[in-house]
Structure formats: C-alpha cells, structure tokens
Amino acid sequence: MATRPRLSVVIPVYNERATVEALLKRVQAVPLDKEIIVVDDGSTDGTRELLAGLGAADGSLRVLLQPENRGKGAALRRGFAEARGELVLIQDADLEYDPADYPALLDPIERGVADVVFGSRFLGGPHRVLLFWHSVGNRVLTTLSNMLTNLNLTDVWTCYKVFRAEVLRSITLREDRFGFEAEVTAKVARGRWRIYEVPIAYHGRTYAEGKKITWKDGVRGVWCTLRYGLGG
Image (cartoon, rainbow, N blue to C red; front, side, top):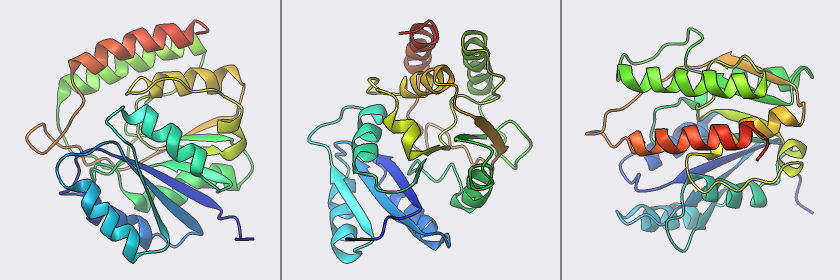
C-alpha cells in the first residue's frame, strides 16, 4: 500500500496554458511531502493536452480531466474526492498566489491550533497594487459573510485555503463555480472548526492578462453568502 502523503495540493485549471506549467514547477519545488492533483475543467486553449503530456512524464502529478466546463467548485470537489493527503490545500493555476507561502499556511495546523487556514491578501503580505473595485467588492462580501457566520475573517474569497482532510469529509459541498468560497466558509464555521488566517503574497493580474472573475460572480457571491450563511 502506498504511503499516505502529508499534503494534497488540488489545482483547478481552466484555460491556463500560459501559466500552468510554470506554476506546477513552483509547486513541485516546495520541499514538502505532497501529491499534486490537477483538475482540468474543460479547457479549450491547449491546456488539457499540455497537462496530459506533463502527467505522462511525471508520475508524481495526477491529472484529472472534467468532461466539460462546470466551474471551479465542481473541479475542486473532484480533486477533494481523489485526495489522499492528511491535509488538503487549494492552489490556483494563474501565478497570482505563491507556493512559497505553503509553510506559513500549514504552520497553524502543524502546531495543532487550527483545523482550517485561510491565506489573507489583506494582512500585510506583499501584493501587486491593482483593481481597487475588486478589493472593495471582496471586503463587502467578506463583511457580509462575517455578519452571518460570526467570524472575523479578512479575506473569504482568497484562493489559499488549507483543510484537515476530515474537515472536508464532514461537509457536503454543492456550488459548482466561485460560490464555493462562500459555501465552504459558512459550512466550516457551522461545524465550529478552528480557523486561522495568515498573511500571504498576492500577484494579481488584469483582465488583459487572463483574469476571469467578473461582476456576475460578485452577484452570485452575494446570493451564495446569504444562502449558506443563513443555513442553506
């Protein structure tokens, strides 16, 4: 029987051919006992073919292909179901988040004081100065989430979230797209799991550089925050 890895890094990918290979090299370079699970969410820009080749060449990389584009939440559920690690970390493929932050993200769990860790872009880590209204929208949604969950998080919509595997096994996730962030936060809060935040670096990108989230996701975010915060 294969030894269970300490960490599963789950990477949802959609049309990130320009960045995913560089991102995977950064993840692989982090000196931790880990497995890397990439879930391609129906990419149409050559990402699937690139990942298939990388997976065939590297036995430590597990590549899962969704039959069609269903959204980040659906891709994450697929990755979580396949994860074998004691801890599970979410990593985006767009180079906005730096795998060098993994040790800081894992530290509260390793010290036995946390079950879930959020990496916050608003706690003082280095970040690219960009998109004022995105930051305002993030803070509004985070405040609304906090009002409903009675948490004092600073960045609900961060990519970087780390969970003890048993936390994910204890909750049922349904959201297929970016509403996943609000849903998982509300359900972790309801389960009274111990949550920590740590500062992380953030290298945001513009729409011209490939950023995908739009105002429509913000509207859906409000709905999901209300739905799951009120017990949905």
